[in-house]
Length: 266
Image (cartoon, rainbow, N blue to C red; front, side, top):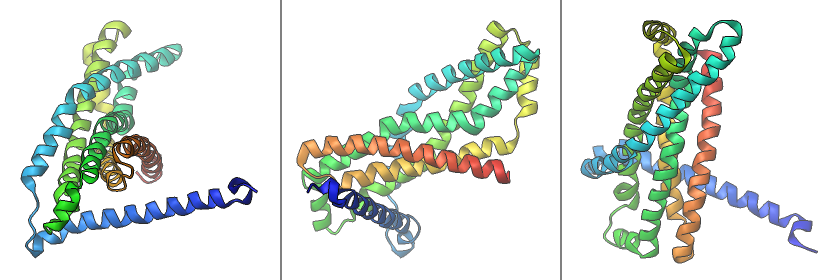
């Protein structure tokens, strides 16, 4: 009788999933310990390495984030104006697009774009170090791989993803303004007034809170998948693919959770 027929194969997958979940929790705990506890025990953070990672994950992601946000702003205004025009209320497209951008579209799409670029890079870089035994060399020298490799990347993601989200908010609104005042025919002063009247501080803050969580997810998944690489170069490629897919799924699930919480309680 096959493994599938006896039910052992699905059971094995459940056990493997729980094992990875436990390992991920321990991985996150160790990262938090090296950030918040170890500095008070004489183990300083590697700020210079974190700044270098900020440039890699943040500054170099600006062009693609700006492009995506600008296009999304255009699409949002066009689609909302198309529907609202049926009720003679196309002027409200500006306010709807602004709120949708800050609360949902900008943080989510920025995280997805960055995850596709950065999560894969984290896994490939650290996974290659694992395969070539560079991480083993760090351990031999009594250097924690988590402190040396993971913490700077985690800090960089927590700082830069909210910054990229703010940039995406502004760029998306600019894209919406351009198409709203030209193709849709909304007056410039009315477009700006509608957007400012509709936007609240909590709309921007909810998007930034999401972006911080998304940044942590991208860093944790990308780095964790590197530490479980098996099988040489082929294993690095497989873990890189899994890293990107897992990051995207976790980001979408987290977005659904936080959107529900903010809708019910804010």
